[in-house]
Image (cartoon, rainbow, N blue to C red; front, side, top):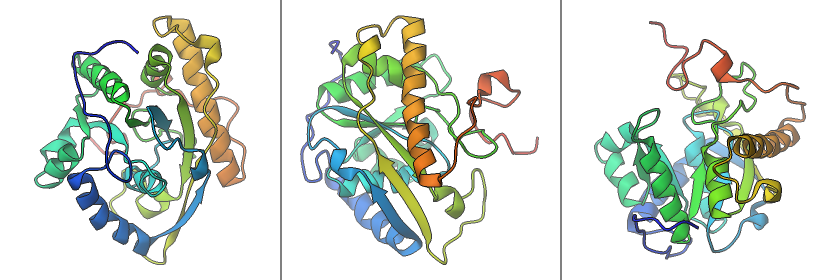
Length: 258
């Protein structure tokens, strides 16, 4: 890995990476999720028990960061995320999230590079880093994974840290994408599945090669999509939705009326 001037303490606690604030938040959120969600978790045994790792997942709903973290936490790891800076400004919640070790990032700005530097430092310390490669809720009309940003591929190729693909389905039924109504009852089945590490050996060490990074990013999204096909029992579109080729905004609520 490249040396970073940013430093993080190695992960401690049980689950690995947890601290007082993380456990405080987990003890509040997990019982609530258990009331409204029926868990369908698969592949948790594939998760590395220690050492740096990148876990990636599709992004469907504002709920899935909680259900995905629940899956990781109960399988032994307390992950670190690069989160929207605005979340950290929310009273109480922002304090808990930051104290739990999560990292604020200004998306789509010149300061976004700092998030990459923080991500490297987190991995150098031995943490598990959670990433949503799409960078925002999917814009695909049928909620299939869309074409991702290339940051996670670049990160993996430059550090050599393994990428564990995951897929989730069900959170969008509890909190629809950019919806305001929350479905609490009856309980909704939420599926999370983890696969084997993505084989990126073909592009290893080419983190600054745009073509290699693009291809590696597609390989990562292919694995996420394959896992989601298993959960849904359906085939994804042959061509992945590319938000850059649409008139939709890259981030934010694209359904909001102006």
